[in-house]
Length: 335
Image (tube, rainbow, N blue to C red; front, side):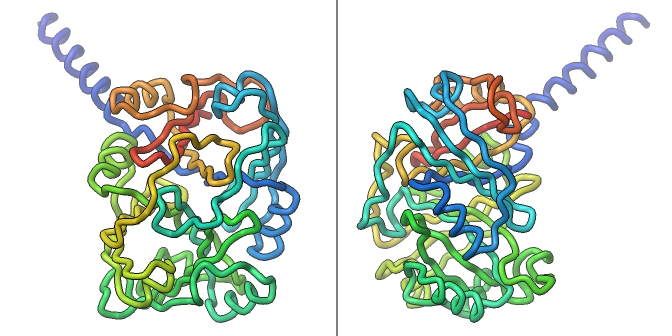
């Protein structure tokens, strides 16, 4: 009887341990970060043009942050900004300064990343962006054709911020998108639906984001035709799109260019202070386990390891930054 009870306890403990080992590494997408050259200018742009609200600002330096971001001798100013329920973080490196976005960057280069800001009215949004003299990246707003079952009726427009980062405004037809995007409350810009990244191989990226991190696939489509070409400003664009989400926060969208194949790879020498640097912050409950799992996956690490933060006020106390299979930076943080 005692032996049977002991065996039952061992089995239950084993199940609990297995359950813990198989919990998703990621519980939420906290924010999308990007490096900027002038924080005050960027805060003004995102506030005035896109209606983001500045929530906080911090300035940090020292060994903890050098080990986290992989940049020696850094001093960073970071502004956290909110639109709806989603957040971005804009970071200016006061020292050392990084390199600008290459002027010939195209939407199929593998360092491409953007955030998709939802608008309640594309015509009004485009007019407002024109009034604020944003730099076009698309020829104008594009309406995706109805033959595309999963994307038909979506309207989108690419443009750039003052540093050349790609941004997108997007509107959903009544039968697509989260319900909250159809309740504007009179606002023109509502929140961030997702961040999109160019990848080289969907299956390889799924192994990383779905199988290792624990995000789940929520949508797929294959987009091509003149509307997609003009949206991306890439002649002959044929894009395999895969959308994933964590339990909360904006989604992560893969853009695999089936054609053309002339997109350039992510620069091996890229640093967090370079202006092409974006960083998706994922929240998790055990960053030490996450680091071990990513090491087994043979991910490249930007951080020297899991870093414990005792200074500043980042909202988390353990974190590390690594790269996905194409070089995009992801941060795992434990609150």
